[in-house]
Structures are given as C-alpha cells and as structure tokens.
Image: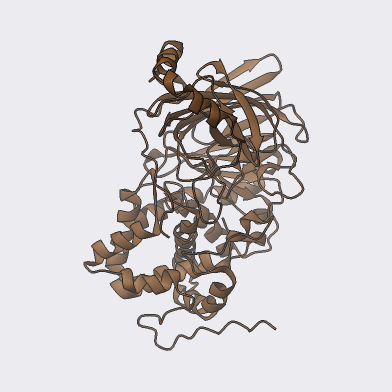
Length: 520
C-alpha cells in the first residue's frame, strides 16, 4: 500500500499464533461437521451442569471489546477461536449509497471453552446471529459484536456462526476504509483494520482463512472477488457471482468489485490466469498498461520464485482513494494513476510491481502482528526500486543513499521500521509512514551489503517458500537470515530494525544521515 497521492517516502509477537488447520480441512461452509449439532450440545450441557452457576455469572458480566494483544491495534482480532473459512453473501441494490443486505457465515475451531465470544464488526445493522443453527443472543461493545450461544462451546469444537446483517457503503465521518464508493459501484479497501466495517470477522492478519464470496447485483453490473469464479446464476433481473480462494487470506486483503465493468482475461507465466477488472468505458485506454502484467509476473518469479496464488489481476477503480492496495489476487488501483499522465511511465510501472510484490510479501506471507508491517512494505518497495533500476536505469544505490539521509528523521517521526509508532487518533492508516517503506527497504539494502548478494537472494526465496500461506514475524526473518548467512545476525539487525538512530551502512562509510530538526 503506497502512501497517499501515489508518492513513496520512500517485533516480536505479543500473543500466541493460532494453530491453523490443513488446507484439506479448510473447505468453507460445505465442510464436514466436526460437531454433532444439538445432540453434542445437550451432552456438553449435561457434562457442564455442575458449572452452570459459573457460566451464568460469566454470561452476566458486561460485554466488553476484546483483542489479540496487537501493540498497534489493541482491540483488533479476538481470542478463543481460530477461523477456518468465511462465506460472504452481499446483495447490491444498484445504488452505492444504500446498505447491502448481507449474510456472513464463519466456520471456526474453539481454542478454549467459550460461553460467549466476540467478532469485530461495526458500521452495519445486525438482524440475527445463529451458532450451529441455533439462535444466539448478541450485543455490541465498542467495535465488537458479542455473541452468546445457547450453551457453552467446549475447547476444540467446530462451530458455525451465521450473521444476517447490513453492510453500509457510506463511510462514517471519522473512519476511512471498508467499502470504497466508485463512479459506477463499489470496491473494498480494508487495510489495516477496516474489514469489520464491511462484514463480521476476526479482523487481524494472524488469523487467515479461506473465503467464498457471493454477490447478487442487478442486470448491467459485474461482480468480481478474490480467487477464481465458481458459479454464475441468473434469476430474473439479477445475477449472482460466486468466487472462492484456493489459499488462506487475511481479512484486510478481501476484495469485492461491483460495477459496470468488463473483465479482461489473458495468460501469465505457466498459463496462470490473469484477469483485470476495468470500467467498460475505460477498457481501450487502460489496455496498454494492463498487458504489462504477465511480463511483470515473470520478472518477479525470476527474483523470488513461483507466484503463490491461483490467479492475479488488477482492479482499475474509478475512485479517489489516494493509494493503491495489494488485495489478494486482485490489486486495487485508481484508474487515474494510468490516465492522468502526471507520473513518468517507469514510475507507474514500478508501482504496479510494488503491489504485485505484495502478493508474495504481505499476502502469501502475512505479518504476525502489525508491527511486522515493515516486512510487507519494505519488500514491496525493494522490488519496486529494483524493477525501476533494471528497467529504467533508476539507480537503487542512489535511492537508498537518499533514504539513508532521511532515515533518522523518519525514525524520529514514525519510529524504527520494526517498532512503528501507533497510528494517530482517528487516522488508522497513519501507520503507513516512510519508515516502513523506503526506511524498511534500507534495512534490506544494509542486509544485502552485510551478507552479500547471493546469500540475500537465497534468503528472499527461502522466506516466501518457508512461510507460504502463513504468517511470520520480524524474529522469524532474523532467524532465517542468520541461518542462511551462517552466523548470528541478531546484533547487526537489532539497530537497523529497532534503533532510534540509523546504524552505519556496511561498505558505504561516506553515507550520512541528516539529524532531525529540533522541535521548538
């Protein structure tokens, strides 16, 4: 996710990582049930009869917002369960200022006994909640939906949560993200903590899951979502499109496009299906840019190995977001970036590669916590800059030297790359500061200088292979880098990742950081 206006300025986990099921188990709402419905619930209730008073006491406690302990977003995510899959159904009324009718179905495993649990959800009206087909009580607490099932849920049980709700595309005055209203419909921009403005979820990247998305819209509209299409049903004057992912995904990477759109299809490396979504009236003028994607995919594969997902493409939205976004398998771009001619050709192409690189770094390998954001943005910036060097002669060394000069100021303003300062009040996306873009790419440059080009390139390939479809932390990166270099790099990287001041650049004794201006 580049900074606003298309410009680039270039930790250790705080909670246990959920144990995720195998891909064979992540079959979505059609998965075999792990619990036996009402009979199992009656048995559990009987076994817990002696603890009824305790359960009632817990259930009567005030509902409060919870979180998984993220340093930057304390109330994001929820403990007690591990989501396996989401099934999202939206009905678009043909007017992007009116709420969508929606049903969210969540399949999950409990990781502790639960007499109630929280989902992240705000900016919609909840009509009903069911747990395993039985009505459940619900209330709100902050930006959480607090659900109380009819009986406690034992540890290690499989549960299905069904929430019928509305999804409001009109942004709240003090919030950005969620639905993006475009000139012809809607798209999504959920980073970093806005998926729960669209649908109930466990809205933290540490809990990735499979997704099925169904969108019903009036004739004349086309809907596209993450993953591959599985069904198109036409009934009367509406059409329902169904898409399904083949790899787990973080909630912040969900994408749904609804508009008067055309879907353009082509082949990428190894026959990879590439599909782009454009407003029909813009198809011809955007095609010269879109046809570059297969070559960019091949370039990235040459750097870090096979593309990690089942498809890729670009969603060219007629919207004013101020940023582009690496939504999984379908990156979101403002169409104006390609049509206004405000930026040189090489720059626009490098931004395309930035979002493409995120499919490996940030999407396939997701951050364990939001403090690990530098692993996403630093790598995407690195390959953006490397592409500009190789394809347009924009020297990487010159860009890194400029970043080095500004690094102390970036650290003072936004914190060191691996310990960014919390977002400004009411500005959740303010964590996307220069320190996690060029400031983090500078860390990678220093590491390459320290261990050599060959070891660095081996590290990059090993990183995306070892952590594919999972989550990883800064500590994981330091460990793997040390393993590949054959020596402990913890001391070397500590200053680069966590220091208030920028360490000396290996092999570049003449580089100097400019001291931040003193505040008066």
